[in-house]
Image 1 (spheres, rainbow, N blue to C red):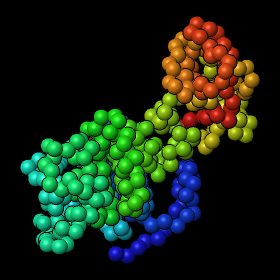
Image 2 (cartoon, rainbow, N blue to C red):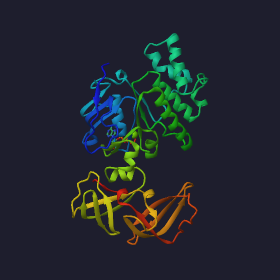
Image 3 (cartoon, helix red, strand yellow):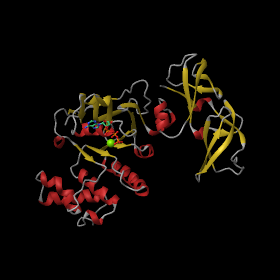
Image 4 (tube, rainbow, N blue to C red):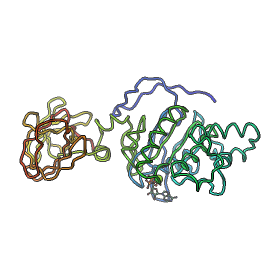
Amino acid sequence: MEERRITERPPEEVEDPSQDVERTVAVELSAVTKRFGEFIAVDDLTLDIYEGEFFSLLGPSGCGKTTTLRMIAGFEEPTEGGISVGGDPMRRVPPYRRPVNTVFQSYAIFPHLNVFDNVAFGLRRSGVKGEELHKRVTDACEMVQLSGFEKRKPSMLSGGQQQRVALARALVNHPEVLLLDEPLGALDLKLRKEMQLYLKNLQHEVGITFIYVTHDQEEALTMSDRIAVMNEGRVQQVADPPTLYELPRNRFVSDFIGQTNVFSGTVESVSGKRITLSTPSGKVEATAREAEVEVGAEAHAAVRPEKVRFGSEGDNVSTARIQQLVYLGVSTQYIAELPDGEKLVLYQQNSREDANPEIGEEVPVAWDARNCLILGG
Ligand SMILES: Nc1ncnc2c1ncn2[C@@H]1O[C@H](COP(=O)(O)OP(=O)(O)OP(=O)(O)O)[C@@H](O)[C@H]1O
Ligand SMILES: [Mg+2]
């Protein structure tokens, strides 16, 4: 297969530290739209996913994640636009001829077959047998740490082990790209966390491109090299986890990834990137990144809870009455009320000796303009 090398030039508005690094595109979606009747499930989606990347599609239920994955796998055809895998256009290429494999949320393993036969199933159907079959199945089982479990039936395995059988079944075909649709959705929290690290390490070892679908932001942040945040069929931002968290492009991304305090108001003055907003909570000093901001316009500024502190020194200072506190071990989450009744969430590390404020106490709070970002629409 011909390798297509490109020099990445992300659109102006997307921060991407990998700028100008030469990388091979594994999966390319260009202007992909999928309609079901009148309904637009995926709307003008353009994405380059690189070889060896752990790429996640993240977004709320119904935003078009599974539909996107199914189009890459070939179970659905785009209504408009094109998809290439490894540089080859996939239009009208049936699923079984595409160099991709899919792992679904439900394990989709056969309960009556043992681990070996489950993993061997697809290979046997494509005529692999004897020594080669044995070697490939054994290697795949080893890859997912199920050596010694080959004779067991799925009913004798834990949920995580069953999910690893499903993974082995996908990996045994040596796909160029592995598509995973909420593969850990059925697992309990502890197992889910274990499997997240496990999958991340596995991906690193085998070097296969993973396209991972989840609606769980923490899961996406933990595992991914890059994430596409989707809403209502449209990509909102594509970036690495720190960029998504620190520099969300718009209100949707800022709300969806982590927690945030948003101040809405009218732009009172603009001085370079420094913006002063007039809000019901008073003046808020903020920083504009990319958004075009004009005096008199409506704007929203967002500050993360861990960037607000107790104290009266900073670009923004207010008083807040503590309403609720949640002890989280390393930190405490405070929910406080500003003078105009707006809620303010803040996190403090529990490392200091000095007493933390109590419920009902009125305390000064401060945050800096550089941590308070003007959000795009
Ligand atoms: N075959 C279909 N016919 C009609 N509408 C569909 C079809 N498949 C999906 N949709 C609609 O397209 C939208 C996107 O569906 P999709 O399954 O891609 O969402 P999702 O992001 O995977 O959500 P979830 O997190 O709940 O799995 C939904 O509103 C869904 O109802
Ligand atoms: Mg889905």
